[in-house]
Length: 306
Image 1: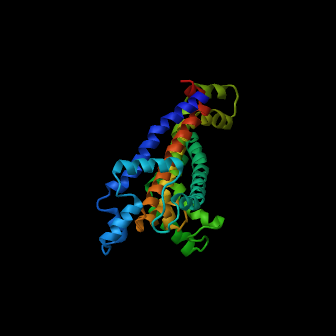
Image 2: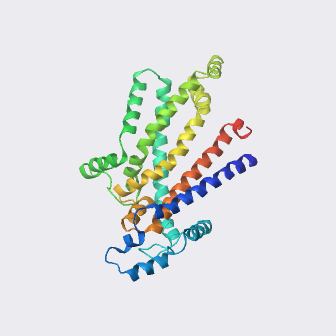
Image 3: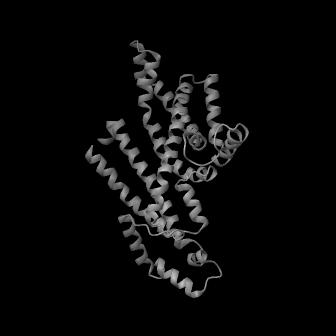
């Protein structure tokens, strides 16, 4: 298992290097002068030269790239231009809120999708299956930038059941988590249904039923357990998508997370903070892919000995 883990870990090194390179390139590929964009059209040439020197943009590109990689390796991502606060400290303040929302959205999606997918698979071809499939298609089709305001209007403005924005209590978490988790629940439910149906057709399930195993145990202990590989794949990949979707959801509900910080940083043209937020999201996505690969090894021993 150690060899399997090290092999997967080494495979992420070039990916992380590519991510860091891409993030560094963003500020240099954007049309126009970033320093001019930060200071505005009324800035004097002296002000522009001073800020360019303070940011290190007057140095050769390869020197800037080496300094950026060194900073990433040591956890130093620079200083916010707007608040003069270290980028890592600014992100660390918002990170708990983002992960709280992400895990809540994953919990909502799993709690809805797994039972719905299993029920649809057991009743394949029935009205229950058609209803579950229709609900899943509806969930996939509704974008969170439309679902979020709709839920806020219904449950906050009209009914007055839940707060519309902010963070502090469990009630504040409900609407953002539902908005972020609903599309994931739709994808996960369809994947669960397809995987369980495929396993239910296997001979070992029929053999278990012939031995007198109850239908519920045959589905949950045998079919569902062996269908976890594609389900775990979706969960792992969608966690990164949840962080990306959190940018919109956090903005809608004024949730004080990294996504909202990213939007605010773009508005103020705070490029070091923009780079730090994007790098965090990208690295988290790569990290979740690595954890998904490792989960394969635990769920199916044939993979780690391949």
